[in-house]
Length: 366
Image (cartoon, rainbow, N blue to C red; front, side, top):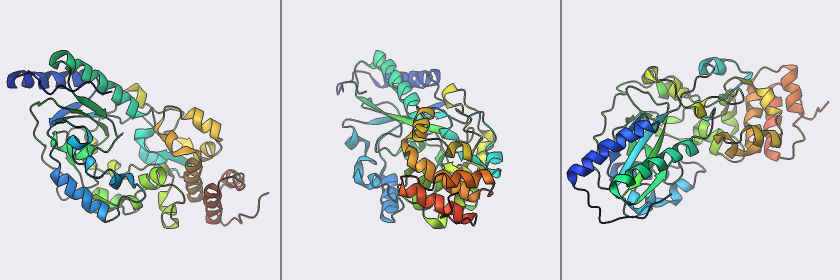
């Protein structure tokens, strides 16, 4: 929601500083673990983005290039913007240990951020409430809230706002919180005082680069999405390249390996947000159980979940690959054979691949 802009704000420098302090206090009351304020100069980030796009690292995410400078120039996206209020909210749930799930190839691994309810709605509501509180002091002002919902360079903005630094895996890191948090922004025309960036603390560590199953971190700070498991299981439409299928293991939605290995995440704390708690035992559920969901069950079970947006076809595609990487138990073979006649050519292709991994002739259906 956008309030009417006011280009004649009457708050003086001292009042703006006082308001900024209040905003940080309100942010904590609303459940944000940290809030920072920055200007709109993203010149350095724009150069990085353009190089990344030139190298084709965005894969099929053509919207990354389509929006042009809107992504790196906030005032072009929302005219009148002079400041960005950046927030972070911890999401690490009290769930079955990630490493244990990854070690059991018959279980489905779902990225920790997607185990609960959709964070977009949770955070956007809080940002709207924050904007309404600001208006009680400033009067009507121009603003727009974003939570991974528009062409916004959220990590560079959070970096500039002092919420952390961008690590070699391209995620934002904080010395006291690791990287298990969501980011959101409030673009505003209020000329609030800005915060200072945090210094970087990755040093010589390259654990995230080494651990990546598909070698997607092609150099420090550069991720080639075309190789990234999160991209392959969430953003990619159509077939998963054969060269990556065995490397996916049991990861059916996203991947957390670079975060799990990061030394700074030993300081991460569990979220206090009930909405981010695991639903439907997705933190440790058998692949076969999920593979048996029909589309109606998929839609009903995952209502309010970020997973729902990939659709049932990609859901089955991803799980079929995971079943191909799992032991060839009678239960798994039977589940795969039951999908051989699925209406989707994409699903059938990945089921046939999975059966081939178990040296089962996909023409055999009984």
